[in-house]
Length: 513
Image 1 (cartoon, rainbow, N blue to C red):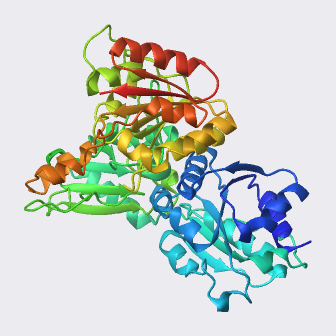
Image 2 (cartoon, helix red, strand yellow):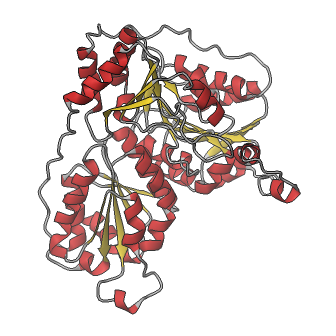
Image 3 (cartoon, helix red, strand yellow):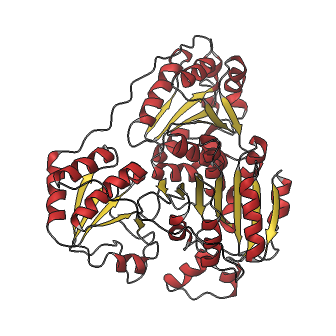
């Protein structure tokens, strides 16, 4: 058995049966091993940013890591933006990165790079393999690190001779340590704040955004009058009819400051205290008042659900009240295309148990709140601010949650970063509906010009315009093998969305906004 085969067998032994890949010469023995060892579902991405973003979406829905296969340091570098997003989403992932043979590296061939140096900022664990005999053990350690709460990215760099040399050994499965419980003192501090009678926000993130945890959080807020919120961007929220809602901290800094202006106590459950995405002249960086007390009930790596349950019990909170009964969204009949009307159509036509991937940026301000009355669904977001996550996230989510329709709400400018994901959706016949919100501009940056007090002229405005020449998304999608159509009225959009959500396979709608 060579090193590459021992790696594949070790991955499978640990339950990792999906690999998103864009291989090159250094990874050919891994590719060959896939023919020798059945059981690995290999998904080809045409760009490494698609590979890493898809592994992110897969982990969010499957609850376990996928492997990635990347070509040397430059291939890793191509995937770094979506690795940054995945790190912020706290997902488990195992990166396998090929490298020059150990004896070839000193020759400084063209692809030689500081691969470890590039990997460390986005990885919780990094190692370069040195011998075929230890590749299996390296992989087992990488998987254990990735699966340790709250979840992280492990990067195993594999020189080509370490892959092809004989002597590989399949490593035994390593136990993943349980998430530690919070200390009684943290419960006491949070309970005292909630009993104070002063305005208090319970800010929940990570695993605390699943339906069972949100129900426990509602026990606490019902008993104390606290307010329940979550960060602006989150890896996964379980929501919809029959589930307890959670309010997001607004993205816009003025709105966020206003939403938190009266808060005296901020209790963090797997979250960080909210800060602005950017600094703006004359505006604060932290969203809560300077004199508000910040209490850490649970850090991200701790058992968040257990912490909420113990806090609710300590407060003597009764069972969770029923989730609010909301009327089903009505499909609008006619009207203009605007954020509210489009959100109403999306909410009314949401498939049961859908997965929503939201990279709608500026146009999507109404989507989240309007869809709360839709059938139960999961809401996935861009977590690290590096645009270009939406199409890859949807690709991985569809593989990680088979049988569920994925609906992608996608700004056109950011979709262009990783448009190759459409080809993978067609190749894998994934049940993904992509709605391209086509305003043919980087609208978010037009807002940011005003926010930072810049005075743009024609040159600056041209840099934010995508209309010269106009981009034809229906032709792009069909060129990648995805059926597509354009909608320029609300009625046409509703007809296309309803049809797309009922059919198997991918479909793209270019919505002219």
